[in-house]
Image 1 (cartoon, helix red, strand yellow):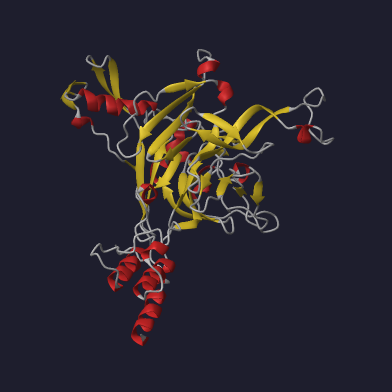
Image 2: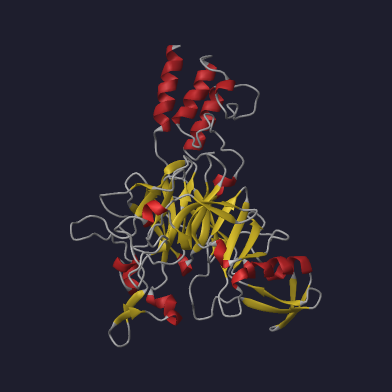
Length: 456
């Protein structure tokens, strides 16, 4: 027993060792900037059988990997290769060899989440706000659903919803505790409760008359079959929210942009944390919301993230392995700079490759302090309308014997308890026989340790 006790202590100590985790993040690419046209895609030609022109576009599902020191450039995953369905016969001509694949590739034209997106049970839902005088208000939002693994457009999912459905959001995410999708939605002409409108300090309209309607953000749940939102917050929030994410513990968080304090032009690429006049961290600010009441329940009085971003669509997500770290892809500057006349203003979009206007980066936000760390600048300035850690979508979490959404020393202790006959498998929701050899022994303990250390 003494030898085994020593083994238990040694294994617990080993679990406390840190290791650079391999983090795989996927996201729906959001072409949220005007540009010089170089990212418009490649037009392959008219497909007579399909009755439409076929193009390969930047929109799609992208994968990037962080190994603790370096970030890979985002790449389409699944990849879209013209050679799989198109045989070139000349520089500007060719023959389509697979109509199904050609249509699949062309469908990514519609993968726009300019009004938000979310993923649930391996299905991506994108919301595209259609603008222009020729767009009827009854068909303002185009909603489409996609298979997150294959990129297939799900049949009959291309539907249109009225403007008063208020589907514009700062982001959508699933609460793992109840399986429901929530979001921070922008509501217009929202009817506010009397307890707010009767307040003598309540705002008035331009004529000075009291009003019971307003526009702002509200925590809502959303039914992905009907796209009906159910407001939870009684009032509204007015921050420039750019993300929304929920961790494995069911806690919801949102970031503001903090863009007005951001560095200008290429200065924004420098990894310098911004502070206010009192020396506190400034910039984008993290807020927590209670999903039951919709109320903001936790602010960070010691400052912001330390980084500023722009009030444009961004995205954030959590890994099940660490509910205290939020991963955020945001901008690194304000989008402004000194123009040719020497005045501070918006830099021209046509020079986005050199003026630093749209540089983006992967950040890690510590939700216990609200402070962020820039992990790496993202090549080619990608932004995403939703993101998820790839391991989050795998069925179950290998090694999570206790069923708390993470693999740690508690899972090691759980297996040891079973070995010592202090507990049974029925006491834990996860699978203790990790090696699948029909017995629970020290090899299963070692298997969990390897998972913690990312050796398996």
